Image 1 (spheres, rainbow, N blue to C red):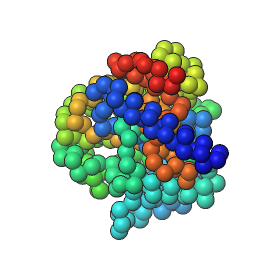
Image 2 (image 1 turned 135 degrees about the horizontal axis):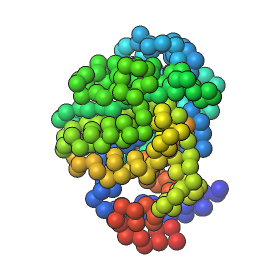
Image 3 (image 1 turned 60 degrees about the vertical axis):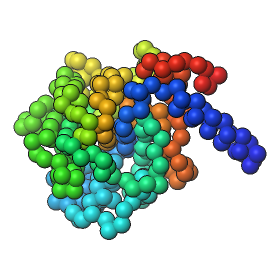
Image 4 (image 1 turned 135 degrees about the vertical axis):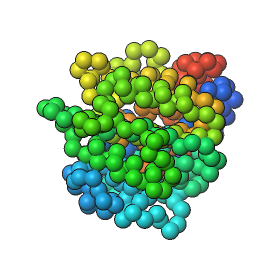
Length: 317
């Protein structure tokens, strides 16, 4: 693409962003962001040996590539980096480590609002001075053949240690769902209830961290038509054979529409097809090509606005 065409496209994209921001209702201005291990079309790897990522006291030998890579950057050998990393640096470092390990997945950051990705990366901003709560889900699908995973419990335990040691989360405010026979079973209903509960308990100034490590999948879009590829992304609960999947539309209603104003929410999705599983309109990919957050071309923004009560005005013709 020549410089002239690139310049025209850039102006068009900026005008789209300005129009979209003008028409967004209040529900779409909340502080919500998500880190995912791969694009919608990609699968996320299950790492056979987390010791190769030099995590602090790894719980077992297997873990998800996204979780393990992020912790290698933020908490290698149980140490916080001396220098602050920006969002751009974290995602590009993740991509570099994954590439070196032979994984093709591209980590990405999505958000309800445009984020300056050159600013400091942090799971909990300084402005979140209230209670810090977390729901952490790890599903190994024990006994499922095929489909059993090995690293999802380890992901949860390693990430739990990190958020407690570094970000001050307290044990009493962390809910764990795992199919290990000890914690609450990560069934369809239990996952949704845990998400509903943490949202209902949160208030302005609080921070919410959601971590999911397990299977993800794609299902034919059955309602709003906001997915340009025609598919919803979905989480795969332990009892999916009996009670079905948890669609991105369900997650949007519970986690985004119902989130109180002033609550900071970060979700880490370590599963396949997770790129836009919260249907957030802004995206930054750690592929080395993007310099800033852009509107996600894979989301129909007219349908998105109509779904959340905004105007449908032909943003994209």
